[in-house]
Length: 193
Image (cartoon, rainbow, N blue to C red):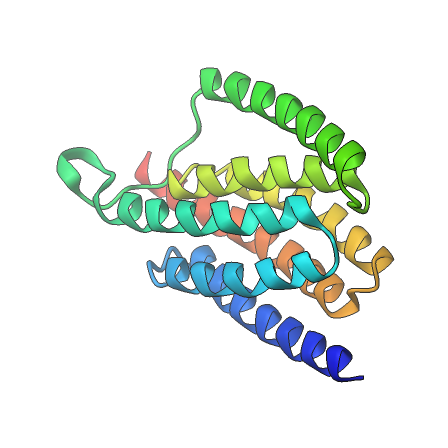
């Protein structure tokens, strides 16, 4: 019973901090990156408890990408100015596709054959999409939200299946926020052109 209460407390805190983070990101507010670090730390512990190791590893990378994103948003523009929203160059899509396929196959195989991971290939593919989307967000590529929409849709089902009902609801809410983020960032990008 104590583990159930502790898990739900952690999950509730993870949900709250994640919603704050993503809401701030949709608004292009720099403080979203701080909340990303906090929520990633919390979810790293939760995913370890539920043997979703790829997602646990993802949280550590998210912390690093959050620091990178914070810097990029402040100084990643021309002459170290604020970074504007833009479209991702075509050649980077090719590189991201290669990273997605390679990461999914290697991570899924490793976790599926050398650990007690649950849903190793699904978990690994969603981790790959999330890594790419987070990097794209740090670079303020508007298409990051399209990847988040896809990932959040499948994460909603996976977490429901695993019994993480609060987190499943969170990812449904993140799906809605990702749609809003795409619309808002697209308007921001269009106003620059």
